[in-house]
Image 1 (cartoon, rainbow, N blue to C red):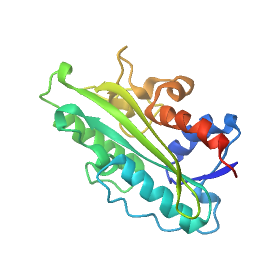
Image 2 (cartoon, rainbow, N blue to C red):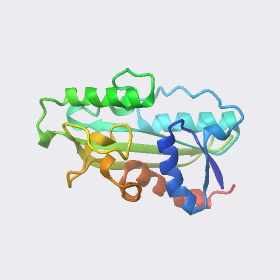
Image 3 (cartoon, rainbow, N blue to C red):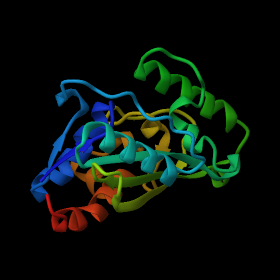
Length: 202
């Protein structure tokens, strides 16, 4: 089975491929297309809604079965922010690395006066698979619980991974790839889809 993953983020592509390729599912990138269609507008207020918009939009535009996700960080004391705006939380930076650094800096500042016991957060990943006619054939949701550290640690990650601290004191960016692919929000959402995807007709 071949499925197009609707993302321009190479880190997401690597994570999803690492889980689904051993399941016999070939994940194609947008870069494999002759022409990459315009990205659908993500104007939903929920992760689920944005995942559906992207999956359906790209599936119809490319006439391929398409997998899309919307994911982000929800911090309890910030009423769930940055939430669906996680990737553009600070509104700064022209490259992915610059945006990540600006977002992390803004989050550190927002929580500067918040004690450790009130810094609970969760990563959320919602996934959706749509067929070329726009019908949704599978959906999943995965969450990853932790707290927000006061300073970034680790290099094996992107986005808010260096600030997302686990119960043992390591951040998500300090996990090796194998452990991350067992525990992360994206891993759990992807694994939840795997059985359904294998049963779908090509």
